[in-house]
Image 1 (cartoon, rainbow, N blue to C red):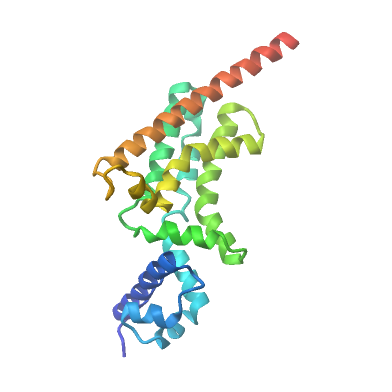
Image 2: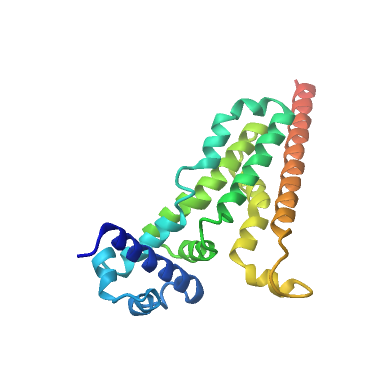
Length: 229
């Protein structure tokens, strides 16, 4: 009889094997036999632990979204909302939100296939796809949209969405398509060790500029309103 520790190791091996195969070949193209073979397990173990492929897909989703589920960026924003009354406070908060987004997406605790798998899952019109979106992009984007509403005084969702996605898009794009980045590099190959630092600095700079734009826009509308009255 397997011990609890061995059972957990088997589950983890199947989840990791499935995640890698799903991200490489697509969810629909991968069979339970292929997953079991990669994990060096009997394919019947998948049915024992997960009830079948659908259950395994959900387990992979739970693993990939684990860091998002506590909604750390949203909680950070709520806990520091009083900072948003001042420009310096707004800058501090938005810079830290970008850092947190990046820390989650590129966490050393999660393999690189997590982002690719989640993107594939988001393309399917299934209940699990909606759960996956809510647990990742839903949480992350909602925090940035909330920041936009608060700082700008503008409750237009479409403008808030566009503003938010413009900030995090470079992070998400690289996470989803690292091979594309390698192909674009003049010398090819893996990025330098400093690349992620440069990417973070660039995204924070864009976020600070975008936040400054919100302040200026808000002031313009305030003056127009005063003149109108």
